[in-house]
Each structure stands twice: as C-alpha cells, then as structure tokens.
Length: 171
Image (cartoon, helix red, strand yellow):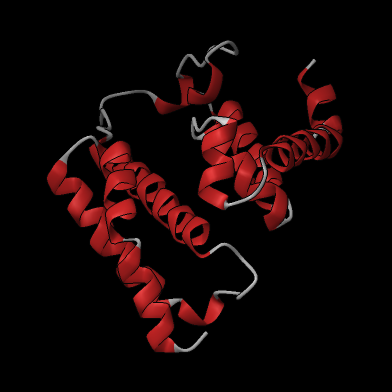
C-alpha cells in the first residue's frame, strides 16, 4: 500500500477512531487529544504496517496502547511520596494484590506473556480483555465469530502453558 492509500485509509476511519477514543477516555477533549496522538503515531509508523493485517484493528490497537501508556504516565506523576515515611519498614501485605511490588512484577510477567503471543492471537485476546464482546471483535477485525472464539481460546491455552511455572510459584 502506498503512502496516499495509507493516508486515505486512515482518514476513512477517523470517525471510528474518535468513537473508540471517547469510549476509552469518556471526555471529548481527551478523546480529541488521543485521536491526534494516535494519528501521528500511525503516520510515523507507517513502515511497520503489514498489508495482510487488518488496518483498522492495527490502528485501534495503537490507540489503546497509547491510552494505557498515557494513563500509567498520569498515575506515576500523580503519585505523592511522603518524605517522612520509613520506606525500609513499610508494611506490604502479601494479600495486597497488584499494588505490591510482587503483584506489580506478576502483572509485568503476564503482560509480557500476552505481548509474546502471535499477532493473530494477541489482537482478538487484547480486545476481549479490553471488554469487547466476541461479535464486536469479529466485526472490528472483519473475521468470522467462530474464528474469534477459537483465537481467544488458543491464546488462553498458550498463556496457561507459558505461565504454568509462574502459576505454580504463586501457590
């Protein structure tokens, strides 16, 4: 696909991108910013697009990742550090979940395992994790409903296999 076709395709899905951005941000101004950031990132990474990949799915994945990264950046900048706290003797409960250092590490391991899935499995699985229903994923990726279900099933199987040792360490 040449640059002009790429840009026309991108312009053609701007309404879809704005709707997705509104769904993610729940704020019109933030959605416009996310749309603009995503458009720039897509244009800057045009050379990384593979023709046989669903263009709209690829763009929406970039948008979702930008939203997540921006969210994490905001959370990091809003974290207040109490200078008077004794950081060496903090009480970190083992039940504290993902807020604990162990939980954060575990979440990183799970995310890394998801990122290591093939794009064919990772895209529908990530959309499913983001709250999309099977039929919405099928429509978004332009693939049959049964294919979506089987890809999510195979992604789960692969993750369970890849995280088998990880799960045993939690017990």
